Length: 612
Image 1 (cartoon, rainbow, N blue to C red):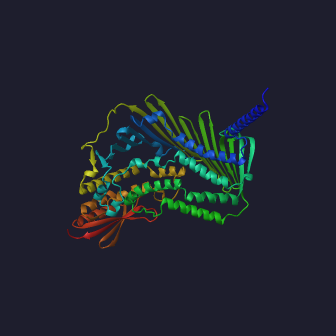
Image 2: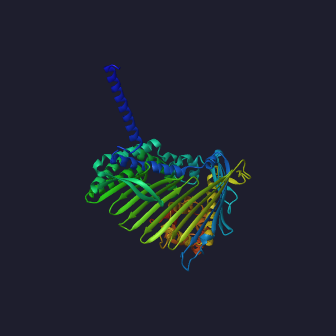
Image 3: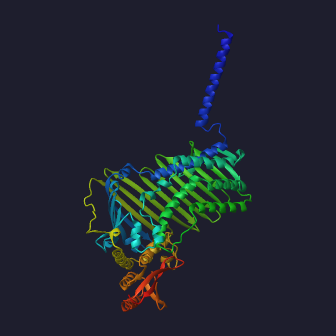
């Protein structure tokens, strides 16, 4: 018989063991299941999963195949063809595909060896089978070049170093040159510096989920089990966790989040990185386009100022009985939908992963302006499809972008298509690319003194003369293109798909920064002081397709008025005759800009000497 004391010890040990086992089971159940957790805890858990879901979507979209990764260290060729088809008056007896854009195509052939910093691309623009424009690009180590195949036999090369010296030969001022980097670090342009690390994502998620959690009492949360919702046409069984907030509660939460954003160095640090890139390259843009004003306000300052303005507006309108309900839907411990519902709008964010296919959809239904927008993404290992649907003012439109890849041995075929369609129009663009890894290129482009000119090595006078010749040739080619291609038809296509607003002068009012810079640069390079008559004649020839009229300002000043849409040969002849008759005089040339469009609208010609 076991002694009494020993029986008591055994009993105590048994009870402790049972309690430890129960506690272990409780911990395991608590960690691995949703049992014993409050509605508030579960709401925050599944709300926070949105960060993980979005991170997963980004990873899947940006993930490269094994073949694509191999291209980083392999020599390969790539052939590309781009076609666009436009249909107007869709579905009517007047349906029309007779548009110049349907006849155009771009064909490119390339050789790439990233490991050895070699990249050669030859591109041609065709109207049917007729080549309209040929252009070649080459990178050979730290040297970059272009060749206009239809115009010149030589590449125009620039060494990516001593850029300040090159621009000094083009008569840029000391102040302008000081803002130009001596070398452009293209690797620093990559988006990798702007990526948020896993640690930063975790910090941000905990930080802002914590603000929400601390700002809402547990009594505001509720749960509904065993509901059925539809995502991507599939029925999904879910549990729903909801919180309903008054306008004051929601605004107070907004204010707390905005206050944190103002001092969040993770976010502000990314803005500083972007700002550094803008500062580096915006200066160069300003030097080539003086109509662009330099903003003294940094992105960090702009960001915090917008936050201050938003907080002020919230504080001024923090009264009302409106309620907002936020609901997270969970299936198999994964957040599949987050919904925000008010009296004015409803927003849904859906995530669903089934059978190796991922589906993401953002939808907004705005009752106040009767507008619905939906953005959905479906992707798997080889295919991706993005669909953007909008119903606004009774007009429905859909944009669909698809990409698929097929790898076979040492080749890969990639197809990208983009399609816009509304009740009246359909525009489709197709890009086909064929990649092939090779041991050696059949005909690798090599640079020598016969087929290239290095701008860095030219003397100032040679460089300026060459740039004037190139400008004249390119301007003439652009005029030929405009005569061959009906630009109004192409602009109308852009209007149809909503990329341009329909105005009386679409070319001017909707000019992008890139187009503006390209247009202005052809005149800005003509600027100079104490230029001889031969240089002035070259400038007139380079601008003749845009010269529309002439204004006499004084005995020594003429204003040459430019117009993108028309020219006047008689004015050009008058100017040429004037310069010929006053060949012993020197001149200054400057440019003037339209205040509304920022485009060069005139050349200012000033006589500075009467005798040399």
